[in-house]
Image (tube, rainbow, N blue to C red; front, side, top):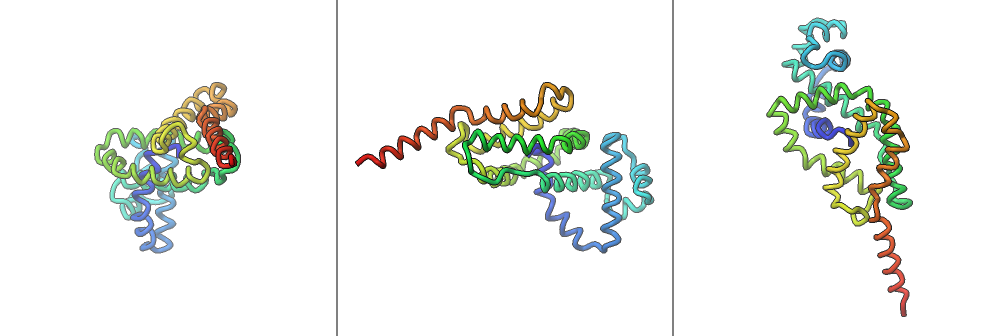
Length: 232
């Protein structure tokens, strides 16, 4: 949820990546995995432009020729790194799964899931920054991300519908998704610089505030409706 650009890239590229991987032998799959891991480490430490293919190959214990045997360009290797990282993150994030409790209580559960993922998110911050810079400086990537936005919204709606009813929110669900996509990366960025300012309690309080008065208004309306139904 936190990293809309990368998550959209993972969704729009996963099918082609999977089909390509399915056509590779086991040895080549292992080689690609070693190169992706080495590139992830090098780019995370030095950035995309400063990390050289020679260094990546050396970290992987392979030759630069092995990189070109598996990836046409450095850009393709970088995108494979991003897709691998975002796939792992999407699989580990623990979305709330229940409608039990008030909206405020359920949003608190979402906040706790974000807090639980924060240590990993902190480690991944350099890669997120590198991909954002890459997207901002490559028009083709920005176009691909724009085309994939509806897919991202659909996926987010799927997750949110498991613990939020749309009529509970003070915003339409699609606008609420935009709010989340802007809010969470911002919180994680400030937390990485000023952890005391964005404490666990602060994150929980912010997410509880998203319930606003809407949940109370909705509950009052439901109680009124129930009373009317009981009136002879």
